[in-house]
Image (cartoon, rainbow, N blue to C red; front, side):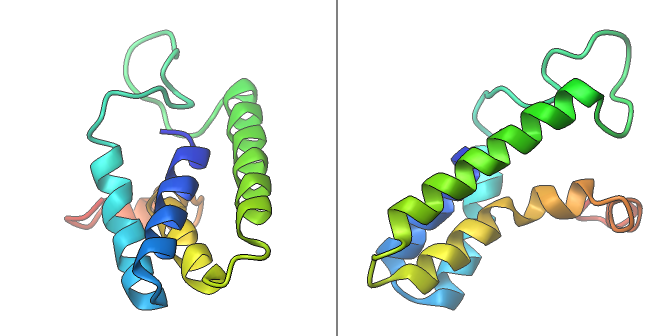
Length: 116
């Protein structure tokens, strides 16, 4: 799933829960639940066998544009909201699993664990 959906879902949970720690936990959980739904991802239309690591230039462009759009929407939706801190906590936690799973220095270590 692209970043915008995870950011908005985590942020909505943050607004609902109104507590940063609860919002953070809900954001991480919501990420995994949302990924259970059939969805389009940056690698959805890859051609060829397997799932090679890394992103193509096109995939990186789509992921970057989507992240920029999601962060812009998050900022516009939360900038004057009284529960901005929990919204941001839930939103960041909503994309955190993908950030960990795709970070060049962290991903190999993370994937070697039972969580990866």
